[in-house]
Length: 536
Picture 1 (tube, helix red, strand yellow):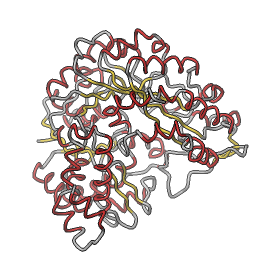
Picture 2: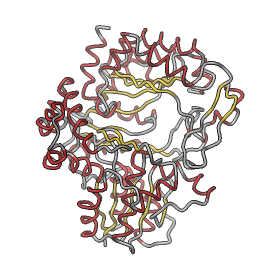
Picture 3: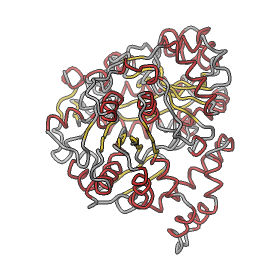
Picture 4: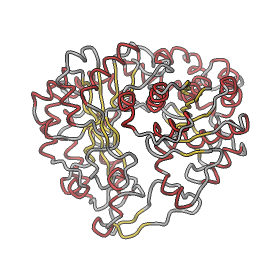
């Protein structure tokens, strides 16, 4: 009998889910029959079907809506073809499809190509998860679940079902789906795993919670537990048992051409966890979801080559928290093997990137874009957060990447404890000074993780008090905090909106960032960004 793996909505539909591909590889290597369904992709395509949309807006006189419906098929084609590398056409297609998705919004729900929000139900509240699981409070995905997905799963008649829940946007729909499956297949074990479930591990155990509908919860890497459940074995499997197949994901379930991406992308990871694990604002430092581990670097380039050739894909996203330095060196040394492949991913501002020759070799290996967490243009803030980077080194690295033709996607985070208005001004000055070397920007206000190292000694970071986690949201991931100065999160947000976005140079960078899909699609506009940088 079959083990069924599910990816629930709602996430960006830019590429197939890596978690399902890794689990498929593990289970099939053990002789298990496995099927996987990306019901996130299927849900979006269901809601964007022409007939359903026409029925939905049959009585509407909204000219903009009618125009969006007229261009529905064209918009999907643009986001699935080279036409989508034209930024103007890309923007228009995204706008039209979002307008069509809004037809399914309710008074409480909002769905876009990149997000799903519910204003009345909280994924942090067990009672609200129970409401969706019981069917008391259906979501806008209910019709897709009941008319399309559940019958499909009933036909498969799996021996167990594992649902991968990695992000908050998935929580409510995932629990609704679990409830429907529990009622349709009452004897089939339901398993929940993924990043979000793992983030809840401590709270679930402390509160002795039993999440509705699920028989088993898997914390951390799912291969070990799922192998035991699927094979009905008591053997304590470890990742070391089959690290080779953990490294080579099985995407045979994925229809790569159906995803909304100007060129198909496959995700791949070379490591789990974070090798740095010192940034005080990050839960990976205080309470890592995945203890750091890396696969043999000698396999990375070969695996990228095999995946690209097998699936006819030229673009690969390395999803590591930060690609390890030895992996970067390995890629730089294998430019010939990687010929024709374009790849991107997160890296730290490592000293090795100050070497212009090394950066040039990275570019020759197919590196088109690197995502870098700068966070602040104030050295004092960086030191307080234990980022482990120096601004003078950042300047050299940005210059090297620009010279080599590697686009940069830089992340900034205002509102960290102890930050002052002067620190924010230094960030503004740094970004304006180096605007010609920054391809794309992500500007954000810090959310304090409950497991943040900053909370271990709050007085040292200017934190005067923290609020209790609200009783109706015990699964909340973030901690509200107060500072002992007039500069706070609200001040930081005003600064971001008025001063950072009020800067012509910074605004120009933000405006060329792909809407909604952001870093998932920025790669396709990297060359245009590099050209634009030369004029700033």
